[in-house]
Length: 221
Image (cartoon, rainbow, N blue to C red; front, side, top):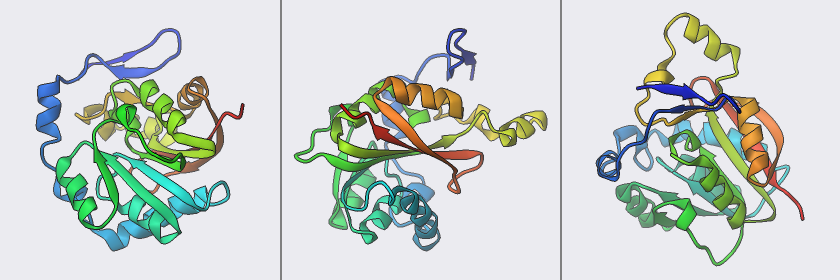
């Protein structure tokens, strides 16, 4: 893998993206830890901390989880009173979520259309997997209601934890084959503002190593 840095904005990204054929192979089957309900009791507790961060800004309405994976965040949001909707690239997971009675779609958020605006959209460790993240963020902005909240979690390249692992030559993310981007807090905030959002809260993520969680509100007209 070859990682590049933009001289103008400092954005860090891979040299090139996978072909459609390769993506179809990657998303043709879910790994065990990505299947609906996997280790749900433990993941439910972690997800509850994420929902708690959202509650001061939104406490009801449609919660869309982009790249819902094992479904833990979306199913936990339902416990809090949100109407869950999921979108993922793995057809196997989409069908499994639908079997639990949750509205689910297979595809890209840029192509998604819903009858109602969303109160919350979450992209939990998803943005770094998307070749063109600005397009996904602009689609999220379109789908949110005027007071809507966006929840992003992703590894934080600006953190000292990241630098320490780099120094130890033990940082796992430089070899993560499904990652196209590495965000820091500063760069993520710039991108969010460019795509119509105002960051309102920063936090540490308990989902994965070196992670950050950022809440952002849709710009008000």
